[in-house]
Length: 253
Image 1 (cartoon, rainbow, N blue to C red):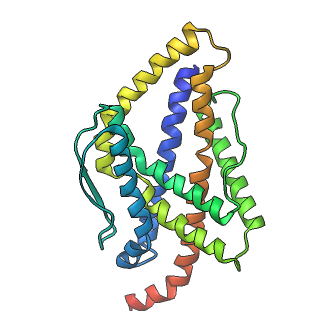
Image 2 (tube, rainbow, N blue to C red; image 1 turned 60 degrees about the horizontal axis):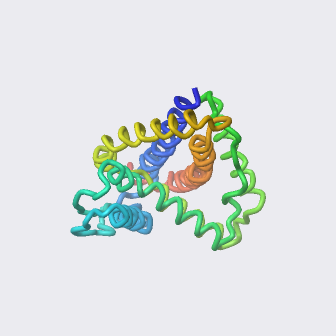
Image 3 (tube, rainbow, N blue to C red; image 1 turned 30 degrees about the horizontal axis):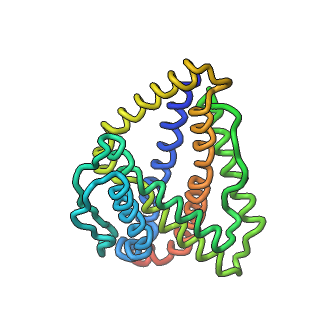
């Protein structure tokens, strides 16, 4: 059961994050003119493409060309096949999730933003996906409460953090082409982890869920941080959307 639960939690957690970022992009397009939004998220697009490029370097894939930002809000990294087959494809495809989250964590540390990592650990892998989702939701709620208790709307750092929350959450998700490129690799990685689990956690008779799935459990619960940033971006969207309603009504007339 821990094996199945760990994989289901992994798929569920990452899928929730990707869906949240796709949903935010869909919402923000309706709140701001596309051209203005494209320039606003430029830092996130640049980090998105740089994350792909960094993953290419790590996996031995040759980078042929790179465009950090275009006026339509897109970017591009053209690269060859990675030397680490399958695993490299996954690393390159999902790199923006890690890169944008890392930049948000770093920004939070620099600005001393209240939404940041704190000691959250799990003793075992959640065997119930509803409980796993509920625990993530509770952690995100705790992050929101902490943010609004400690942040000040009069502090410039709060607004800088909110701006980058918008820019990075809009650019965090891998594109459809990224997911397509890494689809086979994701299946291969799942198989590798299953084999490692059988060897390390079962044959060696490690206690509890074993070190591999204990690590996965602790890593997955950290998803509360980027999900909390997505929640902040959603709140900011509501604020901007309400302010812009009179202007949108004038345009329709």
